[in-house]
Image 1 (cartoon, rainbow, N blue to C red):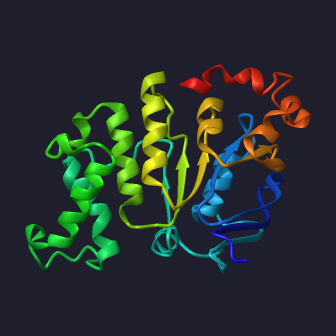
Image 2: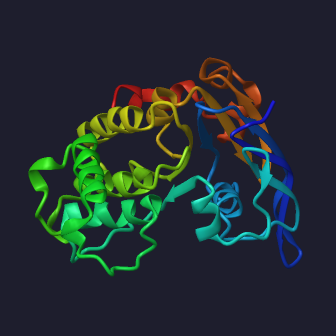
Length: 257
């Protein structure tokens, strides 16, 4: 079986400090996986290894069976993996529509060479409009990204992330800084726009993880402590111990967020 994303004995050291310690993970196409773990567990480093920002010390990362090791982030993106960041990553002085159109251009083969007037790129414009509807920002079409609310900026970033048509999506703390009501709406938005895609998300909010993920990977001190369906992870004694004795189940006051 060819997995959408596969990690094989992945390791990363900085000097003498081994941050990722032999993680192996196989994610089938179309599955949503949440990565959780205490602060300093190595979750962000893992994302950086997958997306090409860091190169592993050893091991392999495979996208649809093809190794990503040694490839640059933009090359990995063109192979079908797209990542959003913990900090909102948009063009603040472009409108919502313009931001989304920038995300679409490369996937349609324009390669950022603007020998044509942008207004004449009917396929790019149509796709940008479609994405605007998907992330519920059609009423904000001509608003500069810098003037959107924080939640709207995150929604725009999701639109840009999926604009290129990537089949594997990495979301880094997608609901960070949102209110309970914003978080609830945003989880539903993520579910809608990633239908049929493979999703990997790092998230601190247990309610988000248990409400979104088909499976949960628990990373502690750079090792994979558990990888299972949410109910099994919730009842895993080793996982509860990793959270300093506080039961994961007790952490779910936010599940209805």
